[in-house]
Image (cartoon, rainbow, N blue to C red; front, top):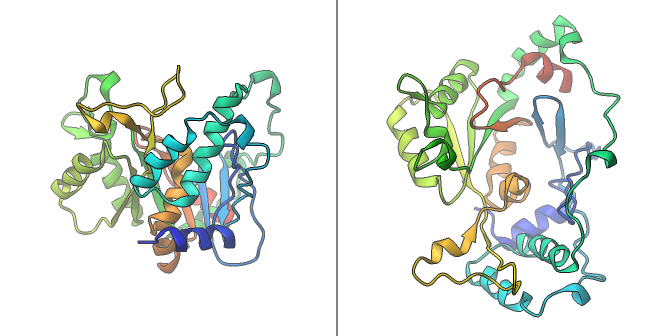
Length: 287
C-alpha cells in the first residue's frame, strides 16, 4: 500500500496526467522516455502513466472563492484518512462549486477529434504484434456503480445478463481467454459483494487485482457544508466518479504493482460494457 507521502512523491514524479480543475483529463502521452503504463479504452483513449505528472495543485485565487464551510469539509476528509492529493483535488472541485462557475463541457465548445486512427484500418501485422505482447497488458473494469436503476440491490456487474451468468462472470471468462490480469476498481458500495463473487467464480487461472475508489463527502446544496446523517454515517459519503481512477491507482499501490509485474498497457472500460474487449490490433498499434 502506498501511503500519502509515497503517493505525493509518485505524483510529483509524474505518474499520471491530470487536470486539477476536475473539468477534463489530459490524455496525451507524457513522453518522458521512462517505462510506464499506458491506459486505453475503445475507442482510442490513451494516457501514459510513466513518471506521473500531476498538474500543479496551486490554490492561487481559490481561497477567496471558498465557502466558510471548507474547514468542516476538509476536517471530514482528513478524519477519514483521505490521501492529501485527493483532498487537494476535491478542494478544487469545491472551489468551483462555490464560485458558481459552470462545470459542464457544452457541445458547441467541443471540437471533433480529426486525427484518431481507425482501428478497422490497422495492418494485420499489428494483431500478431499485440498477441506477442499480451504479457505486458492488463484489463481494468470500472466497477463502482450500483445496479439500483436495474432493480438490483448491489453492484451493477452482478446483474444476470445471460441465464445465471452476470456481467462479472463473463468479464472473468474474457480475462481467462486473453490470459491477462483483471483489475477491478470498486467503490465502498461494491467492494464486499464483488469480492465474494470473484471467490465464488473459483478459477485460479484468472489473476484478479482489486482496489478501492476514494470517497468524498456529500455537500449540502443550500449551506455548502458537509451533509450529516447520524442514523447512517455511510450516507454522508459518495464515490467521486470514474475520474478518480488515476489518483486511486497511485494511492492504492496498484499502479506500482502493475509496473513491477511488467504491465505497461491497461485497457479500461465499464463493467457493464461486455463489447469493450482488449483488441490485439490496438495493443500492437500502441507498441
